[in-house]
Length: 389
Image (cartoon, rainbow, N blue to C red; front, side, top):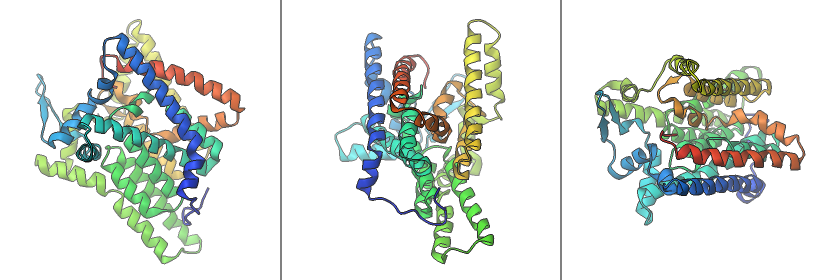
């Protein structure tokens, strides 16, 4: 991999896009298949696929922020208050901007932002994998990310695609020694989702490691040190700024955002609530099948992370995916959303991408095609269910 102290020679934008074109075309094809399946399934159930993508669950909260700002809340019968302060502002800001510059509604603006962001995310995933393992692995990494069972979320007016795009390109900038760019993108990721802290941590670990290595290696130019320090300084400003603003608005100080999340039932308990949830599934049949599936899923995620360590992925990727995974699996809250919360942890997929890249093209294409069909059917079934993704 490229030395973190020395920026890699970057290809032209046209050349970089041409190199990523097979991955982006494949990604667009998988997403189109998922949308076709969703439209067909929704029509068969008398529902609107457009509504499911733009005006259900979290999408509604984002559009309300875009339309009316913060301050809207719902008081539940039990006394809990669900406030829109729980939703970070970058996506609704972009929805408002697009709606102001076009005839689109806030909901459709959110769908457009998410669509473009998903392509940017796919390109970022390709850029990271291509930088580390080559073009073929990059294409496979993008397609594996696209065919995930919960991949339909990438096409919704949710913040996962936007966050993954910012995180992937920030990590790529870290790997290629572009510290200021990495810091700016990390700050924007911190304005998108709470897990933006994982991007900040990855940048900080890489930067601190670089500073430590200077003791036993020739020091880089002073300008490089300053860029690295500036990247470290800028990276946490997005998340910290929003969290402090929420604390000021709620008059609860720096921990005010945690209080807002607690009202939603969200918190970090080390996975205790999730373990109890899974354990309760084994008390009856057929729910035991669901419990077994959840157990297998958790074991698979852990196995993938161990594979990433054995693969000797760069430390920033391990830190980033480790934190994203820990926050997803060890947080209390709505357990049905955990697969979605793992979507940004794309480095976990690199071992699978490398395995596919070693196969003949015809065989890997057949495997990915079959999984894409299954993912499209599952996504359609999932969104037409009663609970939010």
